[in-house]
Length: 245
Image (cartoon, rainbow, N blue to C red; front, side, top):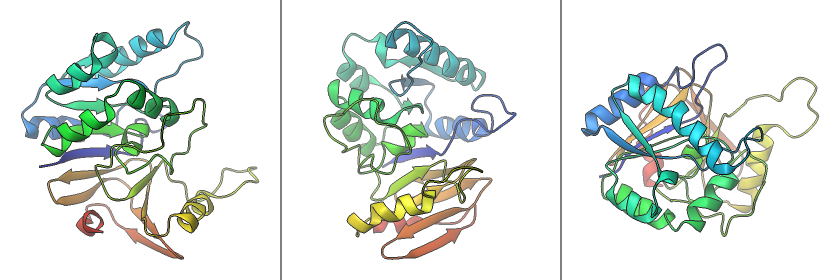
C-alpha cells in the first residue's frame, strides 16, 4: 500500500524552487486523490532568522507558494498544538530538505517518527526531497549533512530496505582534497555489509507504489553494495529488486 516519492534535490542551478520535480509532485498527489498535505519543515534551519519557528514559517510559505500552483494545499506541522494528532489526521505528508540531523532530532523529539511510519505503511502518500528522502531509509547514516544537533537515534522511518545518498556526486568539487562521495559510501558499507546504498543524482527521484519502484527524472542512478560492487541504472528503469532485498 506504500506510496512514496523520494526526490534527490529541490532545485537545479538557474531553476525556480522545486522547478524540475513539480510535475512529478503534482501527478503523485493527484493520482493519490489528495489535495491537503501536512508539511514537515524541521530540516529548515536558517541563521538569518531569529528563531526556529520563524525558519519554519518561511519554509512553509516557500513550499506553499509552489504547491498552491499545483492545486495542492500545505499546512505545516509546527502550526499544530499536537504534532502526533496532526500526523494521525493528515491526508498526505511532504518532508522538505535541509539539515537531516535536525530533522531526525525533531522527528524523535515530537514522537511522530513511528506515527508517520504506521500511516505510510497503511497507504498515506509521502513525498520528501533531500533530507526528506533520507529519512525514509532505515537510518540517516548516508546523509551528507553536518551534525548540528544530536538526535535520540540515527534510526529513521525504515519505509524502504536500502539507504539513499541524495545529491550524489561522481567527483569531488575542484580544489577539494577530501574523500569522494563514493569513498564515503564505501566506508559505510565496510561496517554495514548487508545494506545497499542508492546514489541518487540531482534531478532524479524514486517513485514507489506498493511493491513497484521506478527511477524517474533526468539522470541515471548508481547502486553500491559490499564489497566493491557498483551498478548504474538508467532513468525509467524498473528497480523493484531493491524493495525485495
